[in-house]
Amino acid sequence: MKIILPGGTGQVGRMLTRAFLAEGHDCVVLTRHPAPADPATPNLREVAWDGRTVGAWTAELEGADAVINLAGRTVDCRYNEKNLAEMLASRVDSTRVVGQAIAAAKNPPRVWLQAATATIYGHRYDAPNDEATGIIGDPPGVPALWPRSVDIGKAWEAELNAAPTPRTRKVILRTSLVMSPDRGGVFAVLAKLCRAGLGRQGDGRQYVSWIHEHDFVAAVRFLIARDDLAGAFNLAAPGPLPNRDFMAGFHAALRAPLSVPVPRWALEIGAFFLRTETELILKSRRVVPGRLLAAGFKFRYPTWPAAAAELTKRWRNG
Image (tube, rainbow, N blue to C red):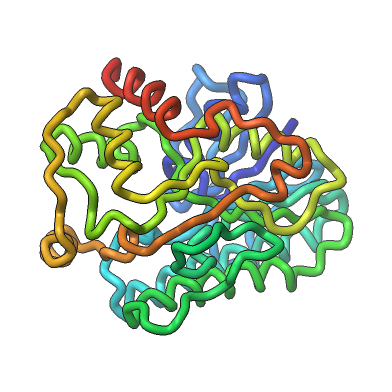
């Protein structure tokens, strides 16, 4: 296949590109700063785009099999007005121009997979959010900034749904935390915190939704192959669990017995100095993959202890 990955230079994009190249597919990554071609990876090219306007890059979509749009400013930042505006614009603008390019193509891709976020679902403890019955939007009483992430998620999906691409199947990837031992990824960051002796965050009741990198890649392959599947899919393991249990599983896999709880006030101070937001760890994201399971997808790592053990082994091996 020929696969186009707008915004594919991040951790998730590199993960997918590795897997596709290993299978012999051709990958074209759209990026603001393309690297020169590497003779060691002849099936990989990087092409310039700005994520906002139609340009020469649109020619790459002609005859492509799939587009996987991953573009968007990182959410690991302070939620001030400037950063929130950039988070929104980077997602909506890139989705809009990808839609315009597909609509104008004479031979458009047969499927468009659009990155989205599981944060679109509400903060809750009582029941899991699947695609059919999940509650979109946060309830009253959450911190004032939390609903802004939901609004960005809604606008992101709305832009995809509005794109006039009748010949291209559209799939929304409502993705939870993708766990991979790659340097700088969320797993590596949390592993270092665990080794430093830090345990559950806040009261530990908030649910953590996650997915092992092998299952994430397999789910993307599955959704590309299944021409009968369209719309929103939750990319999350079927076993979300409270933060206290999630961190306990982390410590068990790392064989790190010291686990000191981190109270909310300490998290707020740390987030301020690290220029990030506590919403990323304190919002309860209880998300389950209802549609993937109904379609017959089989998870290799459905539970956190097994996933943590495998990831820890590779993380230790570098």
